[in-house]
Length: 233
Length: 233
Image 1 (cartoon, rainbow over the protein chains, first blue to last red):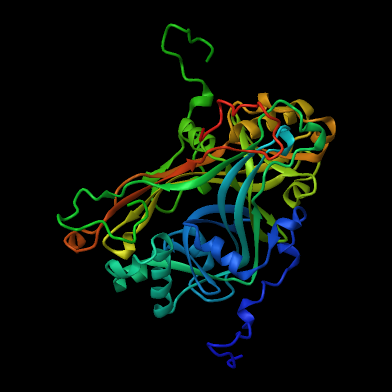
Image 2 (tube, rainbow over the protein chains, first blue to last red):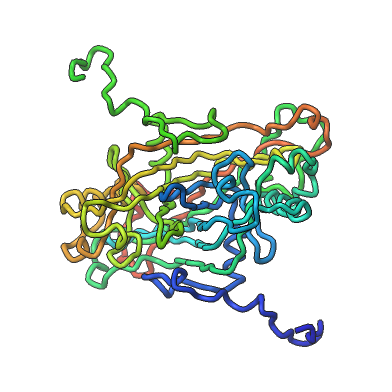
């Protein structure tokens, strides 16, 4: 696989193959909206700030919003040493904890003539896997950089790195990206033909994320400019 | 409790009491960010479009984004009769399916001088409960109206109501709002005193939802104006 040259078309490495479809990443509905394409999945993950981490506690599901970051085919989810999911995952690498991590972006409100066909345009990724606590200090440092850069790319290099004490107080879970699917709806309303003449407005209201003007901390030292990498400048 | 008068200060009805705190709605961290106030919970729920529905399937967690709506102390979650969570919940009212429904709004990116104190401002609600399939036609119709009005308030009345066939093809789960908590972070960075003089910019980038100009359906009949209740007009 190392035979490709900069000049010629590269043999696609295995990591560019789509994610393998499994029974639980095969939806029961809207299969045409589902993708296993690695680049699509990465792009949806990289565009988000908050994931919804699901795990099972005493037989019941728990879904918590939390920060995450990605390095290649590994997803890192943030917590603290005091938080429940991370305690459940334990200190040890194995056996880990079954989790489901979902990231969703809302792109539009879809108004159909019929109540029934109202919908949303969205991009989402669902990751099934096993979460394991990151214990290696080098990996932990890299994961924390990824978590910060997920929120503001370039920020990790422009902040005070974690101390040994902070590293010890931070728990990060790793989930390998293996059983993964993306789902995208990006279309107008799907009204039934017999409804097209109804007098109700129909269409899409685009939805996007807006970044306001950055607000400096009250105790920010004078003379520190707003960094060029911030959104909303 | 019915002794209040319109003129005097009303005795607060039971439904205005805070949600009862339980072991699983008591966070292990940041208890000062957690609230059981009913109005705060309702406001956060009412401001969202997508919830993350968690359930357990073959012992593993599953988290799916989906539409929802609220009527009083009942949360309704949308699905279809072919979808897995709704099949798992079954046709019957009981015993239902243990679920966790989480709604999260991102309000700001919090940049601290230290990587460690980077955070997000957010509002979230976590609902633990049992989901039961709505089978009563009156309740189902009301729930579907709530689902449409959750996305665009006032829209249910300005769309073609569901037919009997559509009602039969739509599955809605009901979760009673009983074991519920809200969590809010709305503050600047929490840097350590010894980091305040560091040369890194620190502050908050506000994040909000932006609605673009509504895009009419390609087949929209001429002369139908954009309704006044739409966001982004």
